[in-house]
Image 1 (cartoon, rainbow, N blue to C red):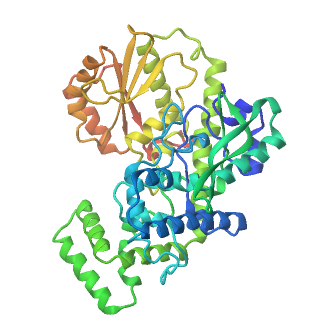
Image 2 (image 1 turned 120 degrees about the horizontal axis):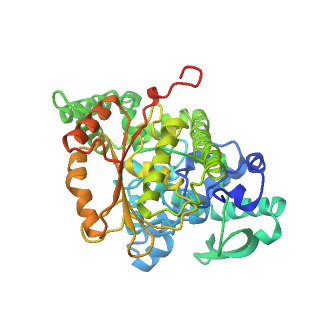
Length: 485
């Protein structure tokens, strides 16, 4: 079962661990991301140099933007990047083909160089410039965009890092020399250059390893979510008493009386937009607390590695050795149901819940649940399509074996306000549009309240005994240790 780099290339996982690299999956992306702050805050000179190179490129773009509007071809060449899919990190399911950085990101960055980064290199509050500043007030710019941009700018380093490991530990016939496009930027000619590297070969493409100590999971250290959650600390960090009073008054006016969580968030965002100095105050707080960044990210990465690499590797190996799971002549429906049932067991009985129900963090979204599910879907002869839209809206997955054997898988959270409608009307519509009468519905819940709600809806719809509905209990407090079970 060649699911991970170590398995496919025949090396001991310990070698990767000693080298400091993640044992990536070679069948589906792992939900980890490069955090530029870990480069900025590192004591390692090579990481500091990498961060300096990111800033150098931003400075180049800033100076270019100052000359006036750029034509679309130049924007595409300098601002838009394909995802570096060869590192197998991100949100792609059943593979590694991500969307990359499109036009929206390109123009958001171009515009930001004229306002957000107007004091680039002349910061008065923070110790340095941070690419992550872009995601603090720009809607739709998230950790995946920041990670993609940073990864593209350090791609040459990742190639060298992987090449060293390949020459030391991999058989020569498992590697090849690849011409890697956009591996370095020539500031004299203002063009991206292709370079040659000796890299691990996976089918017709190469693979890139990434150091564990520049990776994080849920959010980058500097993030909009973190800024909003720390909003109460920001006005107090403003030394000007008059300005601080204006900020507090404006926030209270936007807040209104008896606000809910959403209204508090919206009031905080509006206040930050009105008083942009708060952005730098937040970044300064994160810089001052930077010693924790590596520790927090390391814990997240270790937990992801344990749950999605070590534990899942052992579970799948056990399935292959002890059962007929991967050798049965499944129909598409039987396989979809069996895979969903196995995923349920993984979450409920093998600590998989730790990936979905994270201490001190929001619960996993439907997209994150799907990503975790994708890793158990290996060694299948079915054709798997994610979110195919066949005229009546996208469904999560369609699994097919030829034209006459098709089934659907739909994921929902127990907290989803449209759960009843989905079970009653949406899935049958999807089935008709995809010309199949068979589907598996997977419902994940995190709280006792959501469990009661889900079971009530199923009972009211007379679906409580339906075998095609798989309920997954991802509650942390429902998982006693073996000694107390």
